[in-house]
Length: 313
Image 1 (cartoon, rainbow, N blue to C red):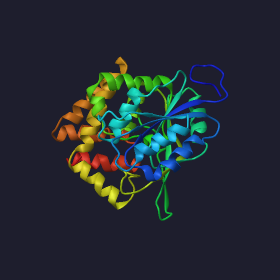
Image 2 (image 1 turned 180 degrees about the vertical axis):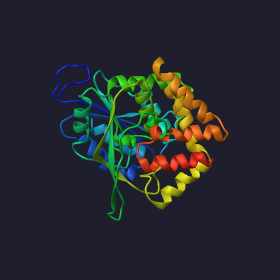
Image 3 (image 1 turned 45 degrees about the vertical axis):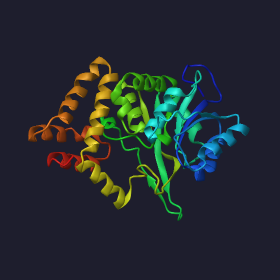
Image 4 (image 1 turned 90 degrees about the vertical axis):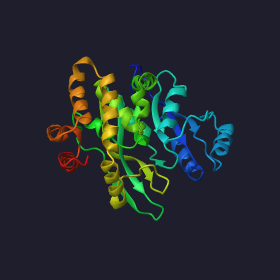
């Protein structure tokens, strides 16, 4: 396998950024599934966000006997999953040549997850993500497919899968870090997976969405959003649409995309931004016509197009 610097390498080296908050009951299984990854050299940098359930003590005890686990000090500036991941991106030591992955506290990774995705990146890509297999405590499972064909501007309205399925090259994580430090809009985006995907695609770098589910994605009451499947998830999504949260989120991502895009790609993004920030039926009609370029799944294109046209989205 070839590393991202073009040097021969038989074993990819990967740092996993682990964000935690009151998840001690799942950490054993999650961390074990990371440290037992096959075909890679892996280490973990963890940062807890003010847990009250013993997570901090668990991390400290595990780090005392596991040299591949480093725990950063909580400085009290977190407050959300995204902010904790942004702190990790900013503060974690990322060594030369290391690929970067992200981990939630409550999933299980397939043993070949990192090696498989490192192999994909070796083909000249900067980011890879995947479908996931949601699972519940009662044994139910459901595939959450993410590998619908990418569209020109899909990164403005949707992520390419949960952040726990991501693997990034050094130059992409450096660009994300620089963007977070220099752009206020980037720091306000509430999902790190959406932000990272938007930065990569707006820059013109290649991203692959793998259909193979690399992560067993745990579903429970504490999930921030979960697998976005079923009636409950649909009602929550409708609430966000009616409150125009999703439109605001897309507006932030479009501003960030315009910030990082090369000069040739900026005019189209600024045009989309003007539509997102505008109002009136002509504006809605123009934005609705763009939905085949804004969503990957044809069903989603039709639904979003209709919601935009009637003024709900």
